[in-house]
Image (cartoon, rainbow, N blue to C red; front, side):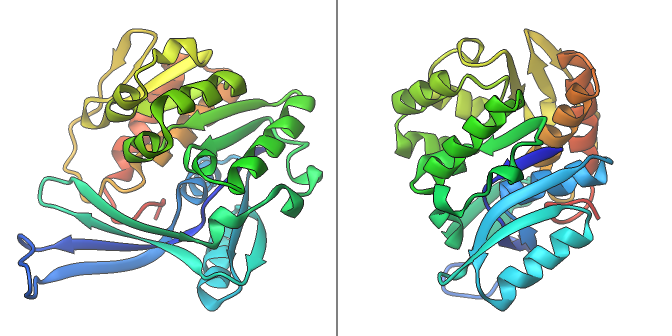
Length: 279
């Protein structure tokens, strides 16, 4: 069982047909679907044949219930806490070069607290996946720390994804580095921007530091694993597909480099379809 604790959000993907024009219309393709880093990660774990459980907090509303049902239909076990606040949402604008601009309202998800959790949700986890989004604000950060304690007591492992350079900068790079040093994750995922913002060698913070290089592939222990050339349709969720494939392979006994090779392949395939999750 692989467990993730964090966001389940509504994804609003916007792909304009040309440059956005201020104070006017721009023809675009707009799609709605499930999102949130933890939820996407779990969806990819399930698609890869693994057992995944998401622990999250959503609004007691139609959106939240639809998102939970959709994830369950994908084979993910969802432990959702329903709240009075609305379910969160994220708008993703993808430009012609495939770059993403995101506007996020995390809604009910950040209110997840240790009192909401049940020990059984984590005691059977071989690995706990923690997006840094789940560490940036309280009380969800306290919930994540409580989950880590249960997983550690059960001899499980922890993987942290740094999630956002802007989030690290707002939280405080030195503070984030201190938190990671205390958590001592077995695996740490970071993009080049996130690693540069953190400004601490990833090798000092985790047993297996994994640098995600986007179209260039990945780097693990100084070895670069190139990505195949593909015509990307939508890069949203590629990092989550990468992390899911890496964790799945690693838990099956693959080496970090072998895991990164499988992760790069999964991420490269994920960008060929619209949306953040497997089709």
